[in-house]
Length: 147
Image 1 (tube, rainbow, N blue to C red):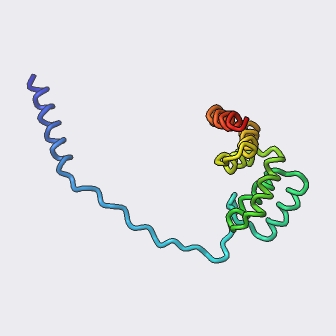
Image 2 (image 1 turned 90 degrees about the horizontal axis):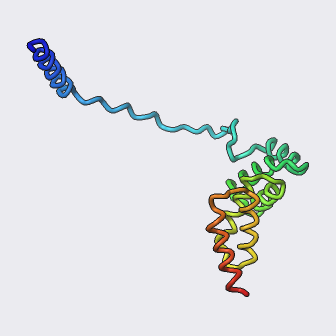
Image 3 (image 1 turned 180 degrees about the vertical axis):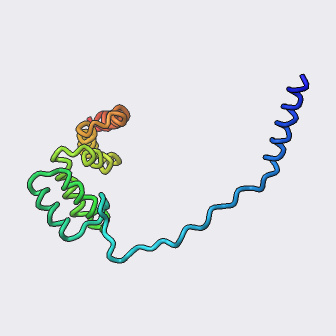
């Protein structure tokens, strides 16, 4: 009994000491961000060098849908919607599932049934099954209004 009382008193004292500890100091401020003007990405960054553009355009022209998708990302980043749309469509037609899903994303807000039908086709081909039931209902409602 005395042993357990001593143990309990010791535990209470330890808890009290821990509660009195000074708060942890905040981490130091990070150094300012520096981006070198000549920096290039070595991973899947969206901006491409001229050499990378030439190589990917050559590969995409031979049917590489991944290369076409990378070109889409590059041209979308630099603000060229015409070339971005061209390479996205090229990639989607080549079977790139993410490009097909993006085609659906760009067409799903349409108000005409033809474009909604195209969006539904892209959604089905991209195998994004989670979005399919609700969007199919939207498309069917549009078709029923136009009959």
